[in-house]
Image (cartoon, rainbow, N blue to C red; front, side, top):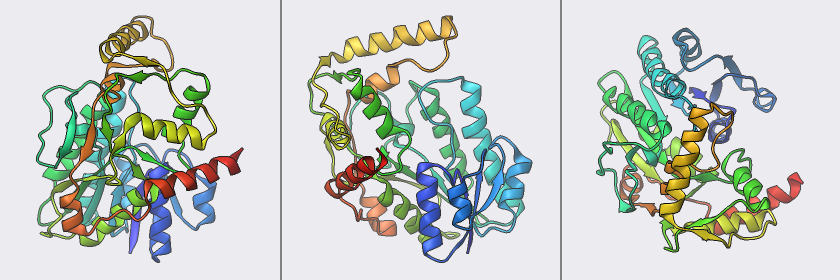
Length: 330
């Protein structure tokens, strides 16, 4: 099997690439820049933008399956940047698969595509898309997920996976941001409710992608469906944050602000950044304020039953591995 992994040099993409190689597959990566580590593993590289149909067509040529992992993430930026990367990019991937006869497409989505700003407690994939989004990332990821699921037919089998808050060794986004802000004393608990939140350890997220791919085929049980993924160990959000801080030898978060105040601060900061066209991103946005003050945990029955997903690495073991990695990286 020859697989294309878009975003193969990213946190999740690299973990998927590694697993594919361990299982004897040939792997090609598509990204904007080259990654020496992947080259050392013998991974072929194609360079380009997701918004470039010609670049993606060249990358897909000769592949048997595509793992579309790459996306523009984050909580701040222009709508067009998110749309071009996440929506147009996904359209280009689907079109390239059709042009080159690729029959399997595994798409990395996000639970945020169904987040309406309120608690999600034990919900399954029947929960609808919201009428309004608080950020361009979930809005464009939802549009892209709809495209992927609608593309499933008798020539192309598609599946969308929704891993929630991926973390672990090698993380260049979530863990470093928590540690950086925690070290500066810039983190605040939002509200006093103990909102349960699902997360997923990196190895489990990668393994789930391969498990879904193995079951994916024209007309199969998983084709045309979306699936939530997590460690299936919902914990109070700030317990998780404090455990990550402890792994990095940073003091726990102790100060608290109300959800209403956090949302108001996020709205003010967003307006300031827009009006004055400031670089970077606000320390808080309305989307983040809602995310950090609501529950997010999911019913994994469908992923368990349809492709046998069961997390192999527990949160406790994952935290031990994370701490060891952080200590080694000092």
